[in-house]
Amino acid sequence: MCFGSAVWLAYPSSWAVSQHLIEAGDHAFFLRQVTVYAMLRAWDLPEAAAVAQGLATTLSILVIWRFWSIDAPIERKVALLLALTPLATPYLFSYDLPFLVVPVLWLVAHYKQRWSRPALVALYVSPLLCRAVALPLSVNPTPLVCIAMAVLIYRQLGPSGADERFDTS
Image (cartoon, rainbow, N blue to C red):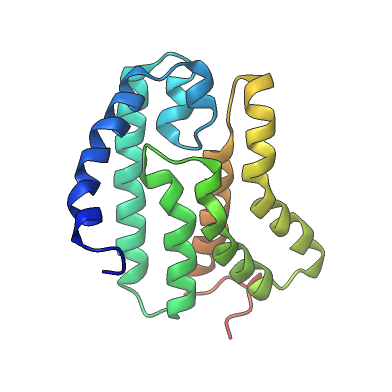
């Protein structure tokens, strides 16, 4: 609304550019992305990338739907939603990831084992570290980091709705 209707009407035209980049991107382009799709496309596996991304998106949606359907604090739900967001999309770069501070801070605030807080903070900076190692190693492990973060948040749903490693207040 601040920028007028022309911006919103032009937005769909950007989809063609994104589609072209996803279809025609080279090895280095995909290593700069932080998605399941890009991780496999960097290895020149376009069919496997499409299938894996479809599965990651579907699983992310199902986990979020399941988690949001239970009685849990909204902060916990938002933390999981944001941790799974990078897994649900095929097109995302490391500069798009500042929102991961929300799930990391939620974990830091609720994880009872204080010694692990530096490891949790490492989860937050890991997308930048992953980006730094992606080109030399020819793999971007950021999706694995996001999976780890989501698992840490989701695991607190044990049989009683909370895992003893987490502060449930």
